[in-house]
Length: 636
Image (tube, rainbow, N blue to C red; front, side, top):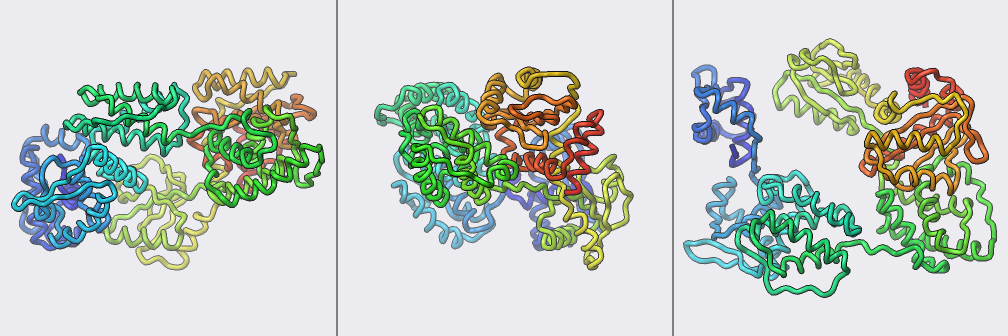
């Protein structure tokens, strides 16, 4: 069942589990009792074919009466489709644009005004912004007396306008009903995502995530327009690369299948233009002159974006800083002038992620140049990259406290408590709000702690009792739980497990260790076959020894399908370059968790600072290792 507006959907949910009088419903919905009666009548009209009605019991309120349980059960089990009513000016403009771009018939403002519960004058004011949007695409709205308004323009402009609008909406709110239930409610973008990604991978077309999403949105729009009988015609594209042509051909075949109609050559040509305009043109390392400082800066930043998912390409300050440094660095490298870096050891230990990114990028470029860039020079570059990362990304990833709020008071009181908590502790993440009865039925609490408006029993998690107007003491008690740093212990729980832990108490080579660990991770689906060669290549560039007998082998870039840390304890030690490793953490980090990657590195930096290597090495099993690790991480 599709509700015509959010208020009806809210009213329907309110009356599912309790009987409520008109006055209470009016208060909760912020409307008059007359509006409540009107909405109940509208709901009953919708529910008539689903075997249920809302009946008014004098003295009690509206109550749900089900006279056909099977039909009503089918309704409750079906996914709800709910197009919300636009409330703000920007929302109304978006909804008006979508209506004009997707309607085959003329529209009347008075009909839309009645549907959206606003005046015709309000929509008339919004139309100025609507016309301004359409003017950018050379689209016009014509008005005919008694028929209403209709959009006119060529098909290419209509598609461009609709795709740009949906792209803008997607950037603001990817779950917006206009996307999920309105224009593309048939799941077009989801269907196209796999097809487009497969084509781009097969034909080696590099594109940002945003660029790929735009292509998916355009394809979904194209499918809808073709189905409705609005094909493209009379468009031809200039020559493009063979891989772009091949990808456009395959995607066009998929569009034809989804649309159920043949596609014209113009459709495929327009796809070629979209793909060619958004693909990332790679600069081959071999094509970069060893003396071209500008190209080297661009290559380093592009490499970091491609292999580690951190996009620093638009940071003008970082670009300028790197350019200034590299100009003089090239002179030093060319004439083999060695500039000592007194902070090199500290840079490796305290900025391990930035170190790996920069080292991988410079090493990739170094294969194609006669010059050798020393670790000292790499260390200077790392400081610039590290500052850029801190400027743009939440590198110091912190897991904020998750809270379960137990409250049996009214909806307005719940919202007041919620607002008060978030005002006092904005880092709080309130995961669920449940009643006392629901809390008592829980077997365990997944959140970090519980805030309740009444006394409840503890379920292995701390409970703080808070009144609707809390005292300073209650807020202080909550604060003690909020301000605990749970990030590193949480990382340990999430990415370390007994299945990826082993103690090796016999001589073993580094290569044999890599072979065994990577083979297990590949068999379990954590990594692909390209992971092992990348780990070996990374180790050959510079040793991954962090210090104090702790080593962090990993791949060049974020190559894992899922993130996991494989822990190896070697009491006898394993030769690791010129040093000996006793505690080894093989890192497999995926691009999905790249924001948390720095926090994973922080776990190992903490082990180093706390000097717990010997205690970790002497652990007899995973439980003992975990206990030592948690003690160390909680103390830091």
